[in-house]
Image (tube, rainbow, N blue to C red):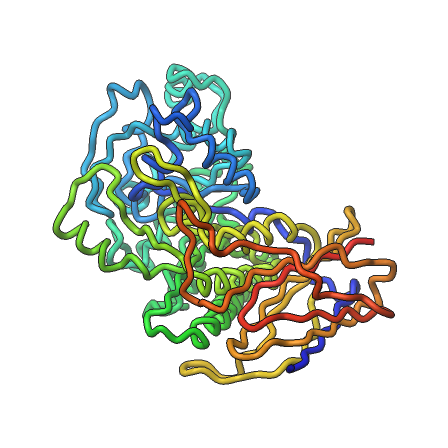
Amino acid sequence: MKQSRMIIDKAFKVSEIDKRIYGSFIEHLGRAVYDGIYQPGNLLSDEDGFRKDVLEMVKELDVPIVRYPGGNFVSNFVWEDSVGPVEERPKRLELAWRSLEENKIGLNEFAKWSKKAESEMMMAINLGTRGIADACNLLEYCNHPGGTRYSDMRIKHGVKDPHNIKVWCLGNEMDGPWQLGHKTMDEYGRLAEETAKAMKLIDPTIELVSCGSSNLEMPTFPEWEATTLNYTYDHVDYVSLHQYYGNKNNDTDDFFALSDDMDQFIRSVIATCDYVKAKKRGKKNINLSFDEWNVWFHSSEADDDIMTNHPWQVAPPLLEDIYNFEDAILVGLMLITLIKHADRVKIACMAQLVNVIAPIMTEKDGGPAWKQTIFYPFMHASRYGRGVVLQPLIDTAVHDTKNHENVTDLCSVAVWNQEAEELTIFAVNRNTKEDMELVTDLRSMEGYQVLEHIVLESNDMKICNSAGQELIAPKSVQRSTLDGGNLTSMLTKASWNVIRLKK
């Protein structure tokens, strides 16, 4: 058995984790809203039509912030259609996903759902087909106490207290030619700058996210960030990153190495932000909002067929990826990557939350909700990854894959919750052929004992969960022992491990 060694010392602090890195995303897309969080008439739904079983699963994930209402959807979103008496709301052709939007769930209903889910809203504004005035009107509607046209409109709609939404996205993927109202770098930079200035006059307490590149492969990356931040640096707090991965070539080893690409993406964006800071002689850091990330590729052919040949349906089954075991491992690796960069990644949103490339699925026609394989690494990170990130020193074997060199067998990070006196080690053995003995030097964590070792493992990379059968679920194992300050753990090949210690 191969051996890896690691040193974890409480002096090697990276940063306090912002809990919002365990955020998620609900877009008016497919069955995310209708049939997902909202299903009136279902015996499992509450008096407002919200699925209680879904709400319980969202609470289990402990999601502190949810981005809404898009995504590509937001670039043609007319927010006024989504408020007021439901029976008076118009139906609209939804152009991003070629669906029919009935506006039965809108801004105020989603705010109510967010409270029930014990989460905050992260609002995206339409800078595709709309602009500054509409952004200001929407902010006034959401956050101003009263006595003005749009705040009084909210009160008339039955919402006396302002929503006080604190995080606002200045559009979505505006670098993408697929985006309605796609902009050049300079066009977006100017529009975002002026919108940000106006919005902060209305509510100086809000935080703003400037649109970054839609993915690492965009031909304008990272020039997009350098150019747009040249306009927005003084007025925004974050720049966004989006990235999805898929195993299209059915190469598991190379698939597991994709988290290294994510790490490089983050490092490149940080470097670009710091370049703009230096150029501006600035004092503040622009932090990162990785507000779309996940595995997404399983449903692509079906999605193309629906949007091309069967458009204008209400809540069609779009982007309903059914995740397998290896997808859960990559999600775990992506979470470790986000945690490692907690000094600059302050917000992140797994895209998405229910039915659409999601950890939670609901069956059609009132069937049960169930947990996908990717539910569990996200739940573990959100539940146990609160506290200070400790930078591990790792000595491990490396291997090459088809498109990556020097891929480490071990990928790991530690989170120290000083208040609870708990230490959590998240570790993935990326070697798909061999188990690993991991020896961790914990001499600085005197008095700590092993609480539990949780593992997600399978010999079948393609095994999936379903409504009737949960074939992949975490289990507690006796594979970690602590002796004389050294923790010895056995990590099976291609496994997600959560090793928890307590003083």
